[in-house]
Length: 498
Image (tube, rainbow, N blue to C red; front, top):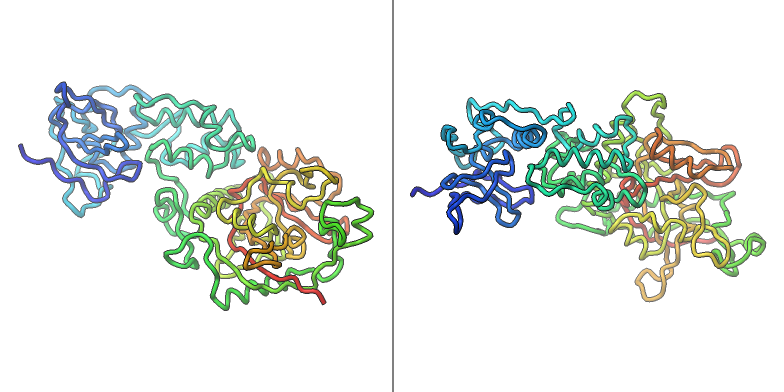
């Protein structure tokens, strides 16, 4: 018999593997036992199939000729309502009575182009809603536009995804999906978390967002990845040392301009005799650790972590969209001292800031590799009583940033002996999406209310302003989700004392 036609370039399974074109042989027993993952029809013996053995993914020849969007439409229609036999013939799924499907496109043809005269009549609707992307599913179950799904709406979103899968796929368990997506940690799932979970299902849906820095959805989607920023060094990942003298000068200027030269001591800097959290308040105030007079940048590293950048980009874009939506709480731009553009401009449509976070050198490297970890909140240099393992941060357990290097430096630990940077200090510059920011000026706080305002209310972040009303030295920014920030640079610097 004539060999089966070769697949069009770019024909891939949801796992990213090329599809191989074969004839359905029926196996040892001589009967067809494979099913098209798009139209859910059994593949008849002798029919052409396009398959990935590793993922057990198969398409009939008719569905293979459809665009990815039309496959999604067909899969949604098949899952949400029983299709009549006539409609199955119309979609070209290889039934015996159906006319022979058109041949595959010639090599070099674009896979998403449909054969002439072929038109999809089904619509990807679930619960009466047109669903063309992962973002559409998320918004269906987040009607208030909070940017989060609590456990019940998340379970409903899982059922929506189930309806879009072929009927022979194993039922999804919402409780397991909740844990896998990270909902058990904070009590909510944001869009990057939801998107990451949905992509593992192999639905083949686009993300449905344009990168805030890109010109088209395709540039953003790219297998769930956003574009590498143009400022990144090509062909390198992870921490890449900065050698551009202009960028190094701009980073030094950022240290200089955000240093507070007076009224700059707080209890978190610690005791000159015993260090941080190792003695009583009376000793700390009597023996204050001196504040540096300036900071000298000795090395800087750009964090070229595409995984963290992609999730951050998704979070930023959804926040831009929500900030542009009319609401009882209007979006307001909130300036911070450290919001410097550097080589990549910040997005003022969503209060995107650059902020400082000081820590140990190992912690800074870990943050750049896997982002900030909420379960570490309160375990660092946060003030706590002597002997306690964890303190309660002022605005609750979250990720804290300073707009001034002087504040972040309070939490930077000396690099220990044995490191090339021994005796120096480290800080991370994070890009942070503030969105609709709640500015807190009072001293008596209801921490649970702050989190509720963010996860269930109209706000995205907290600006703890202890300067304007209370006369304290510093303001701090707090966010409660790691996808809301991207560790962009790691700085190695020396403290200077006059």
